[in-house]
Image 1 (cartoon, rainbow, N blue to C red):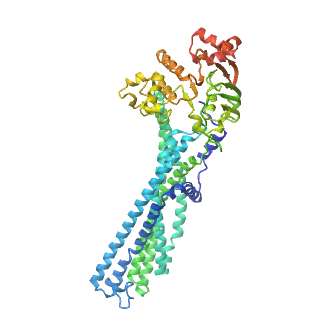
Image 2 (image 1 turned 60 degrees about the vertical axis):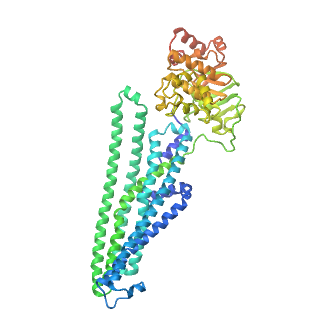
Image 3 (image 1 turned 60 degrees about the horizontal axis):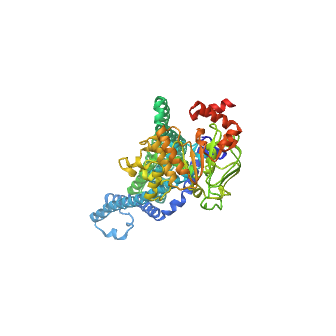
Length: 634
């Protein structure tokens, strides 16, 4: 089918290539957009997320308490003062010194155990919740991609879409656990420690906080650059996946045309650029970490310099200074990892936005409001002044009108590019006409739900696609829930039953990818069986015998004749000899039906069909030469 796309496809492509964020504010907006879009999935895991939050708060509290037993050991056991105030917990004042030491050292262990247990509970709860959320989002994205219109898929690259489904979504889960949660814990811990330091000694707290403006400026500047590089890296990873998928999917053509070197060069170029961006991200992260280390060293030195003076003056205790230094190092320690966290979050944001872009892409073709389930079709088809084009200024069909009565066989003939395949694509409602109507049993296709419409139309293509499952399943895909008896009956109708039984596991034989383990004729007969088990009243046959040898062509043609009995059948063919028995022949050229009638009527008319038929039968050449004949006739 044609690979160009319509007006809406351009808008869809624009969604994918949305303008990249240029600053931290844009990155934050991206995070809000992702959370808002996935809020229904997040809300379902409310209990586990709440449990994770409780664990986070307990972990933060334990971190705040950890240095205090050490302060008490310094102030009341190692360097006791006669004027020291009573211990904050009354019963501790009555304990002997060694017992008090034992209690306080045990408290250090207890605080650490509390922090470890809380962190474990938080991590496990968040991991389970994130995995469930991501699994649901991935399933939703896959389902959404299946329903996006052909106009979208004709422009999108398969490898890039697979990257979004697998890698981009998995990165969201990974970063939630390895970066977002630790960053949140460290941030809250930092603010908690700042509050306690201000309560203990505002002078030392202010001195320690003097470096924060420099830290924030450095972080904002480098994080902005990291986010930009991360988005470009994700874009290149998608391009690499697309290149690899296209090359592997067409490996026969690649090897036949000796394109390996050229494709390797393309992949290598994207790979090198991606690795340069990875190195650039690491360089920016390392620069931020070194900046933080220097700021921490300066803050610690100044606090220590002033703190020792306060201890000597009696304005603070050694334990106070110890808590300050511990808090200062503990609070700044996570900031050393901030660059790493922000780089990971930036990558996850880029991945998340790519996923949201896809989910927000609206299919061109979808159920109209008030659409109903299609009743069983009789098979009457009418095209009424149908006009269609994949591009606004390039029409493919122009005012096409014709009628097919139930059970009629309609042959669509004419040179390539005339609009034959487009016509049947409109019948399947893979696209909608720009103007005009397509009716089945005198009802517009758009009145029906898509699934109920398409399941009543069977199709056999020139290149039938089979799936890497059993032959039984491949046939059953024509009608999910078909019984074994129905599957076998369809295979017999398609002249496939005998060769299926000769396979190693018969109907349970697993197919190679795209049916590569079968011959072309065998694949085509499986596809006919899949169409037959559907028991549809409308059948589309798009060049079903092209490329087959005489023996396979005979078997396939015989199967097609049985399939088309009592059905309204549309046969697209370049072999005019295959159109002779049709009830109606439509000669289509340049988007218009130039001639119509039975074979005998068109031969008496003596027009283009008759001339081409006579040339083709007289010379005995390939049906593929029809295009050349049509061109010669002008």
